[in-house]
Image 1 (cartoon, rainbow, N blue to C red):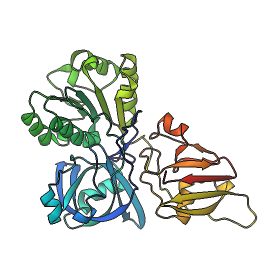
Image 2 (image 1 turned 45 degrees about the horizontal axis):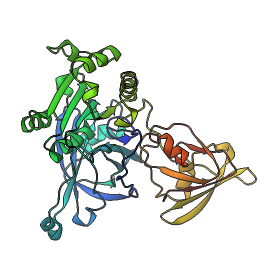
Image 3 (image 1 turned 180 degrees about the horizontal axis):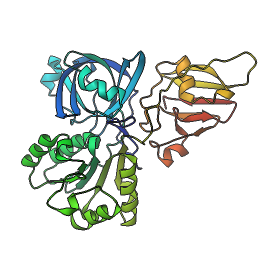
Image 4 (image 1 turned 90 degrees about the horizontal axis):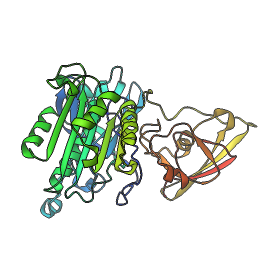
Length: 393
């Protein structure tokens, strides 16, 4: 997915309350080597990276989280975020002592016209080195106590990526948990992880339920054929998935599907706090975070103070430039964290300590976070002469 850009992962915008046990680690890039590239469909691959033992803690993650990949294409830096498709590996004490490396896997689906996703189909191969950000994201809550719990995932296309890790976790952590997956694609040939899902079904035949909905291929059951619209979703909730029997919902796909599900769920009485969602794309093109901005003598500026890793830096931003806080921060702190620069992933999250800003888009922060002063710096524009933002809090 790019969650935040075409095709791929993820970045999450889960509804409150967030998992209290989720710890936000500082987003840092490390260069990792590609271990394997496995075809999933004609236009999707699973890419597995080798994580050296000394970096294992940096890449320790929760099911449902994502990583950003960074490389240079056509002379410019490109970042794309993709959900982790494998559940976290369990390392034994012996493996840790022996320095055995771990693995990290993402799935990349080609988007029409997508620069990175198209390159990834042929440019990523075993031995290739690429920058990989430490795992981020909060599409993970609701999984603390799984005994007797029924978890439902709804995915479209590459939205299956984080749900693969979530389904595996739900089914392996408890012998009494259940997972139901509603997965929509155009045709059977477009179904990512088709064999993996079949294997998981063989392993947990009574606790895993799979519903494949194909929009351009006729299924035996009419309810599983055609695009998921409001009428079809309501039918599914009436004949296939009883909302009163579901404890947690995980939605992953385009904004249109997520919005449809949330609206229908609200109408049938599903509590908002039991719905998590992650967007792969909002329908907009990927945004390049940094553009040249020069401060000319005598022009009015805004003073932006940034604290990152305990170090404070100051930059002047021309009022007429209308640049984002992130854009300005990158001029003095090139290591300021960001991934999608489109308001979806939440990687650039920081807290406004002084001053005020307005956000253009926000698909990642919840109302309670905004009330506490958190903003997405890629979408934040100062509305006061001076602002102070803290990435460390």
